[in-house]
Image 1 (tube, rainbow, N blue to C red):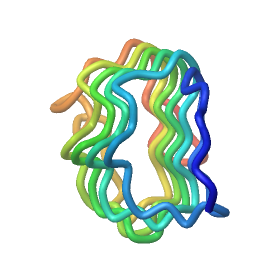
Image 2 (cartoon, one colour):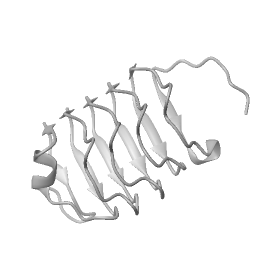
Image 3 (cartoon, rainbow, N blue to C red):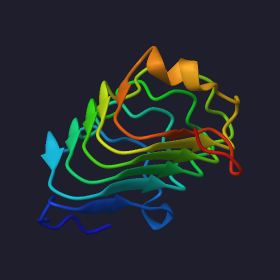
Length: 130
């Protein structure tokens, strides 16, 4: 792949990149950040402050959120990561809502409250919101 200069105000990690690591990412982005259908085993090295939404879905090798963002000002969407069994590394603050379902473990609302301050609601299944 060719490496080019990017405007990191908004970025996407997608399956066409076959991304295996987030090491070296900038400290913050001004918009949404997506890591979908990658080969990530960890979020270590991830962007720490996301001023928009954080999307993390269909990452078949991801087992925890360790090393992920610490502050998401928008929504935190974490769905269909079939091996995700731990919320360790959940952001300390989420300014919007949390969607987290279809993962390796079905999490309960209190699982999130242990890790993070969520300003919006927490949706733990595709059918209900809390």
